[in-house]
Image 1 (cartoon, helix red, strand yellow):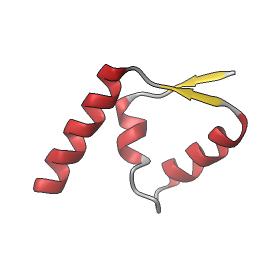
Image 2 (cartoon, one colour):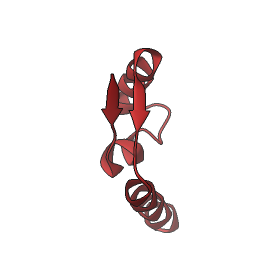
Image 3 (spheres, one colour):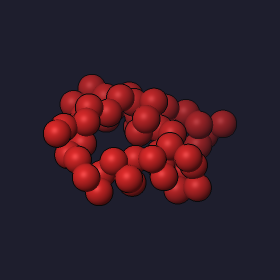
Image 4 (cartoon, helix red, strand yellow):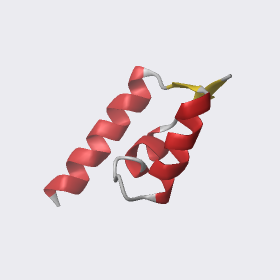
Length: 53
């Protein structure tokens, strides 16, 4: 099964201590994760904004 990730999931799971990261680790142990380039770029952009603020 493939699990489609959105930018919010990628952003939230960037924190290794987050519940979202924990959940994503469980999902990735059993399923294939998929995200398109637009989603990846949005997550990168949001992380840059958060880090600079």
